[in-house]
Structures are given as C-alpha cells and as structure tokens.
Length: 153
Image (tube, rainbow, N blue to C red; front, side, top):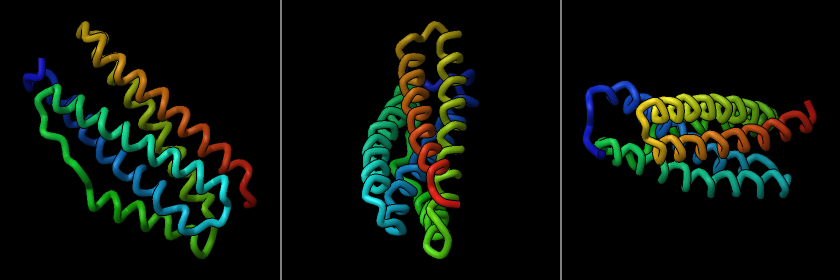
C-alpha cells in the first residue's frame, strides 16, 4: 500500500488528469460569479467551489496513497477557466455553465471507472473513495444543468 506499482501507471496518469480538471472546476466556480448578478447562482457556485476543495484534497490523498506526488495547483487550468468564464461577460453565463456541467459528467464517469478498477483489485477503501467522488460529480452536473436549462437563451 502506498507503493508506486507499474500496474498503476496508467491509473496514476488518469488520476493526475482528473486532479488537473478539478483545479479547473474550482477556478471556474470562482470566476463565473464575476459575470452574474443572480444571487442564487452565485451562492450555488460558492457551494460547489467549497466542495471542490474537499474533492481536490481527496484526489491528492488518493494519489499520495498510490505513491505519487500530486500537484498543489495548476496555473494553466486557472487561466483557462478564467477565459471560459470571460465568455459570460459579453454573452451569458449559459455556455460556461454548460461546459462545466458536461465536464462534471465526464469526471463522474472517470471516478466510476476508477471505482471499478479498485474493486477489481480488492481495494474497497479506494473504491469507496472513488464512488463518493462520482456521486458528488453527478450532483454537481445536475445542479449546473438545471441552471443551463432555466437560463434565457
């Protein structure tokens, strides 16, 4: 346990990609509120951003447990998130929210695959962590999608 095994190399690469995506999610949830006056949306994004901190900590802990040294931040993901959020200034927050909802669904699938992988290795604690992450990501996707569907086009 905690030892970097060759059989985990592909998984580590994918988990590191998921971590980078989570940095981007945290950044976008902090950036979009600058371009809206809707208090309910701002509050919802604030809650998602807080949950992102917990998600990032969980993914980092999982990577450390697998023997990797996880990144603590990604300036490139923050910059890209801010560029996406900037779209809302002349147009609408709809596109950044839709992109974010799609990204959350994608990460939910990733965590589901990670869960199955760990279950196949007989590692129920790691599998449970990924299962919990999958559920949070699905909830985020649903919350964002609800806003996308109800915003004016």
